[in-house]
Image (cartoon, rainbow, N blue to C red; front, side, top):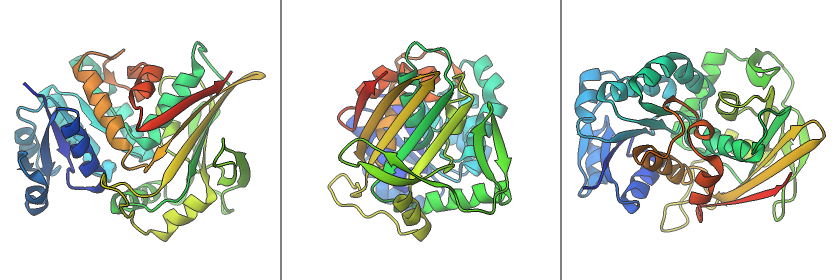
Length: 339
């Protein structure tokens, strides 16, 4: 019998990609959300259930019979905890696609002990930001038990954010009260800086080549990577053109039958220990679409017992990073450049 995977926020931009990926991988999607009209329009032959994070009883009913749940509904500051609570009550794995730094910090802080005691896998940030970077850094580390620095440079050809991305960004800015955040000296640091983010050039592999990037453009990798790897400095960068597109706020436009935008990406990871560095590069199309194979492959591995631990864990901790990345082909191309 095919396994049922609930998708909370199924009719959202990323949720739709996840539903399609589940169907193509042989799972039975169970569509969850607050808007019955949107659920009905998406459902086709699939079951849907109306539910809300404000109603725990409705979440319990919604997850009845599900083998796992993928949370695609941001802002995750509002949705992650209630859906995790429901997953723990149901005794089923939880995966989300949260890119919100504070929401991911909350998941590790508030649910680590309970999820471990219940032997339930809870994998936050199993998406382009947070999950992919963590897998790449873990693969680059190889046999190293620690490193001095990890650098994750995001080379996006453009960035047209979804409404969910913009809403999540607003919540994060409110929680930070105007402060910036970075991971340095082995801890998250919130600080005030009135200057613009520093610019520098980054030499991405061809065909992207040298591009201007913003330093201290901090993403969820500063939570996932240090959650299990001893690296006191974790820094993320974003191509300046993509950051400008994010600020403009224009939504992505589909250009193919899969619903993907024309956006392409290169994620360039460099890990340094002393005088030695290792590098891994990943590339593909559409950062929102690529979150679907990441999240669904995570669920598949959890349900088939291909995990290294239980409880709250990032992608690089719970899975064999290099094997996981190889399983994403042809959606993502990964190259270990050298060490």
